[in-house]
Image (cartoon, rainbow, N blue to C red; front, side, top):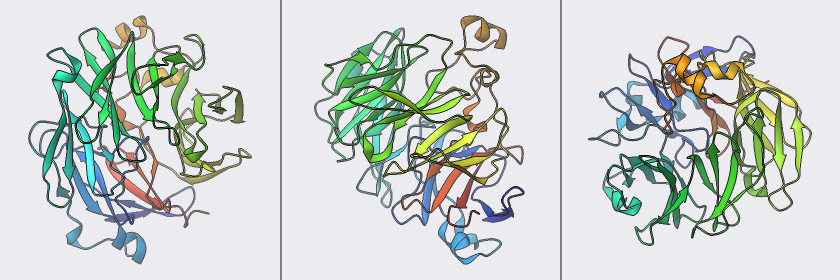
Length: 374
């Protein structure tokens, strides 16, 4: 690995990947590190399509060396047809990765590279269905993923062992499905565009909107505030807010331009990146709203819509001559491309943070130690 000193905070930032191919950690809603925090997994296009790789991040970070040995060469995990680049999630067993590929959910064992097909197109009852981001319940028993087939949208849900799979229809695009950390029968998800936040039981019952709002209130990147069970979300670009899961009371944690957010397990800190202006990666105290800067990402943070405080309209897409893919299309110019965003996430032990940056001209994976930040 190659290190550079962050010009804002002075901490060492480690570049895990290099070369002409795009590489980035998994999505900000997921942890990108294996147990122990010495190895991480990430998506790379170095073979010509999106595949999963792993690399060591322990030697260089722990020793303070300026570069790690050649043994840090990334190891390829998946092969064959391209995976969904932002779908990978680590099972609670610490060794199995779950991801989507086309219209199927797969599991792969990290050490043996043995793949297992969990569920496929038949669960959506239509040929050509595609699955997007997936999520795993904390007990490891249940999975869910966004689903789309033509004009039909929704979720799929079922057991990790491949049984009990079914679809949960929804009339609009679905992104970011997540299991409640304390009540795994509940799934929270985003409807795109507004109103944004919804929940449904994994059996398909109890579907409801958690907050009614219009297109001019730009809610994004909602997720659970660790083990508190409450939700946190950004009202872009004005504030980081918290919603009580039971009462739906909303309060502002801090007025700032927090962008992609990743709470720690206890719900005490919220990691985020920033944009317009880009003030780097920040750690926010969930109780007080106090912020401290971790480091700069120096990402290009592309996407024209982030200049505004509303969701994109059909006219915005037409002007950009592209359409937003529900699967986070890498070619989108309205909200992306996604690999140009940092998407910071915690390591398993929460001593490190992984993020993406195209500071060198190509998106690469970076890691910074939280304990070394001022």
